[in-house]
Length: 297
Image (cartoon, rainbow, N blue to C red):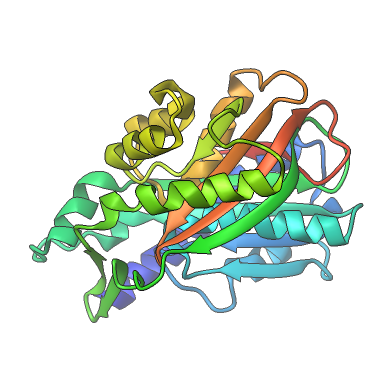
């Protein structure tokens, strides 16, 4: 039932998140007291107070650390977290933001639900915990320069939860795989506002909603399939891990050694709404403005 699933969510989050957070802090060469805001994203369980409060108490973050829990953006929340961290560090240039994504999609498994959305989610989704640090200044990584959001009108029921006594039942409209056709122009528009062409960037960190999503976006952006290799690797290894996908794909960029200095890139998360959360940035060593400094999964 819902109660048992949510109890398990809380226990597993507390057991698994701290080590990932500590790794992100260590990679960024920061202490818990150096963090000014924690952005926690999850769509597979519920806690109040948010896990942010528990982390502050358990891991030594300052009592004046801001808390931004994001609970209902689904797979788009990874991109939204990056955007909110960018906004925060733009407002407070010396600040450091910690992003935490915690998704236990297996808790949405409903063995008696034969709806198409439930069946697809059973085969597509996976569990993942990821963390990243966005620094107002310093570090090596993606210097974030612009962010934006776009919602496809009248699609709010295409991806949804049906909340029952048995837990979250995943609803997925058959039209969801077609969403890259209207979202590709939104990505192009954001890039155009920045004087860039979204089809001619050096790296892409894209939410891996499924193979069709990546294939279609490749087609509509007119970029080679290999441009999304980080996202494809995440999908192959872990499945769709919801809001954690973009952070894991980002980790793979770091593991590859990053990009050449001033390389331009796009990060985007897609989820319920249908919503796209998008950001643009350049790879730099060290970053001089708000940038994604480290990621850990």
